[in-house]
Amino acid sequence: MTFRVRTVFRALLRRPAVESQLEEEMRFHIDMETRKFVERGLPPEEARREALLAFGGIEKHKEASRDATGAPVIETLLQDVRYGVRGLKRNPVFAAAAVATLALGIGANAAIFSVVHGVFLRALPYGGGDGLVRLRQDAPGINVTDAPFSPVEIADYAARNRTLAGLAEYRSMWFVLLGKPEPERVQTGVVAADYFDVLGSNLCSAGHSARAKTLPEPSRCFFSPTTTGCAPGEEIPGSSGALSG
Amino acid sequence: MTPRTDLLQGTLDVLILKTLRAAPMHGWGISQRIQQLSEDVLQVNQGSLYPALYRLEAKGWIRSEWGASENNRRARFYELTRGGRKQLAEEQEGWERFAQAVSRVLAAG
Image (cartoon, rainbow over the protein chains, first blue to last red):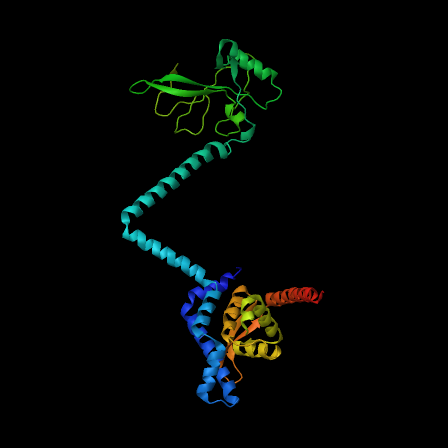
């Protein structure tokens, strides 16, 4: 059933026009046939009768013609939709339950997908996100996983590194924030000076050489949710900037 | 049209397409021409022409527009589209092959 979409639409939208068109077309045909019989010598009534006989059932052919346009399929679909809507209006409780179920289903799906998208599918917002690796130390003999790195170990790794473009360490630490009316315990992230460079983020760039020849010195770069940049030793706005660990 | 023709819907379609290949025509003209060409073998129940015409139009093989008939009455004229011409050629070929095959079977001893 390969019907051209345009004809179907036309038939749907201009249904009264199609009706009168069918009527006129068939009337013309029957009149012409009547005239043919009249020319053969039949009286007008008999001619008309012969013509109608030759034509066959008018209503039947009209119906068949209407169906042939392919519009009825869509019409019945629309009729079913209208019937469904009427049914829902008569039964508002059921309708509300159905809508709520659909809403929950769709909402849950959307929420789950957003999470999956954010965590799995989306690329990390750093440059070269798929090239990042996390190094971890395990000591299976004493049943230790993810043991912390000591500064000497880090220096060692850095010195012998041949495969990685950069190496940066991080840890989280609790500090006490002074300078406010009440001292407050804050959790902080402590990272190497070139941490952001290694990640490929331009949040804070190491202004000086990242690796000292001796044990690396901690650099001071403070962040709070309101600061966007840093300089070594910059103070946290709104405090007198002293952390005691 | 004899009842047999009604069963072979595709046959009526190809007859209409062939008739329209010569020139655009209105429904009554098509039925007269088919009668004439088939030497009156195919006639009766002319109304079944119109569902066929509407179907062919829906498929895009013919197109229609209003025009003036020989006696200056308003009539719907149909004409073949390019797709219709192609379809006619295909069906003609298929029909000839079919007819040959049937004759061969019937001619065989």
